[in-house]
Length: 229
Image (cartoon, rainbow, N blue to C red; front, side, top):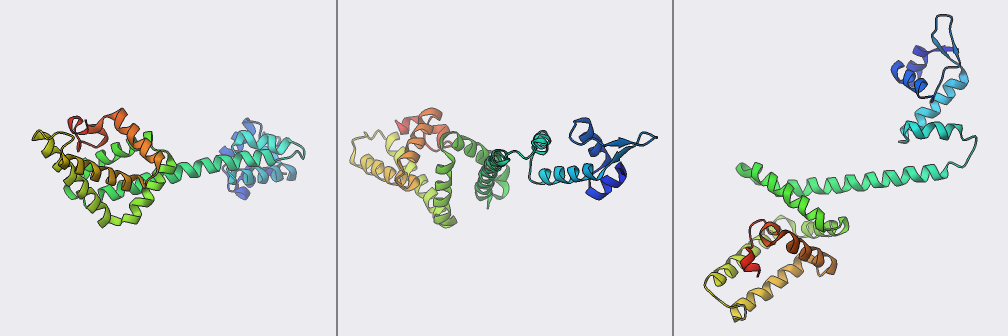
């Protein structure tokens, strides 16, 4: 029989942890000494090593007891559930990594305005995740990487120039049927196709974003409602 301190040292656990396992009925010491100390048998220690092994596989304490007590039952359903949980966690972590990468890209070279850009970038990412699926965001990220920093800067400048030209014509009273406006509209559509990669799902998500949030908020102040109309 082994005292609780010996068992804790052998397994790398704390005495408090072993007390907790006893309190929740996961591992009870087989005996007590005359002084009231917990005494663990070889069978207790073997059970404890199994508990440690299950914990390292990510199982919750509430799941481990039934697994150990199922008397040779089929554990495959429990393992499948654990794999499904891990897959969900990996997906969440991958999405978080994507957010952080996009945030860092937005902040690179921001210099003195980094704090303002930081908040704008977070707001933009939060908005995007409300309207684009994780798969669509992954596609957009891949397209952004393919363009590279220089390509992204050129695309952003092209949008800025096009919007400024369109706003100038609108302010000057040009009608939508004006050939100059039509040429801008055609170029506008080409840039949208470049952004969406021709994917109808991404295009629909983009339309829903602008329809719900409004052009000013969706474009972060670049496009006015009058210009969009």
